[in-house]
Image (cartoon, rainbow, N blue to C red):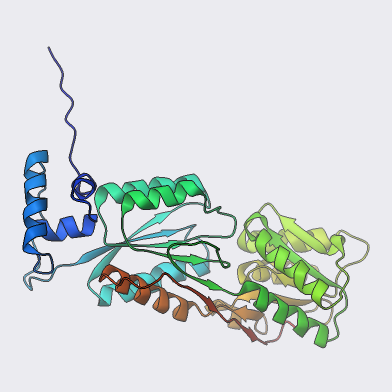
Length: 337
């Protein structure tokens, strides 16, 4: 018996032939009034030639059409990234867009795979959250070309030659503020707690220490193989194994600081008298831990609000020059310093 393989035509295939985006194709096939008559005719003819068929879900009684946003994040286990997912969904829900979230586990190959998958399924816009450990390689931008949709980046630093909109928190400025605060409080032996995904913040910590002519003692820098609270706990155990220890430590993010607090308490050390502690991100829980964690606040609500607004403008055919926006962090002083 002769076997045949059916090749499914996608919105992306039609968009490529029509020289337009998948969202425009989707709208044209739904007879959206925003699409010109000529473009609708062109897309309809291509779809017919390609044998494109798709079972359309029934619209709500209201007749409202919902768009689709693709959100790519490194993970959702930590409070920071979970908050980004929540705020993004909350924003676009009000704008009648549904959000499909994909997770990379900090792997660029997974990010690329998700981009090509979005290209096949059809979306209106992309929001990409890239950690400093994820290299934004040419392959990623090649995959973005395949998606052919507006994209907005949330990154950890400025990216030169980025042809897409982006927003980032000025982490160096925040860490410099934190180091200066510790120095002003009289701490002279300052350490750092981190893990493999926060080496960018370690580099900023070193730069800040050099700016204030503070000695960088390698024995006071602990990098754990574990993440979050377990990583912070492990880092403190490593520091306490040495004959001398820092009088203050900069935890690369608040969940590590929480684990560090537990380790110091288990060792019957006082915070901040025996060891001060400073975190990063200002999670909601941070104000309730110990006497409150001194931390660098990441204005997450502002970051998501600005990002989503810019992406929505792009979706609505804004042709302005791509921009990168830097957000200023704030120092929140509580009981651990």
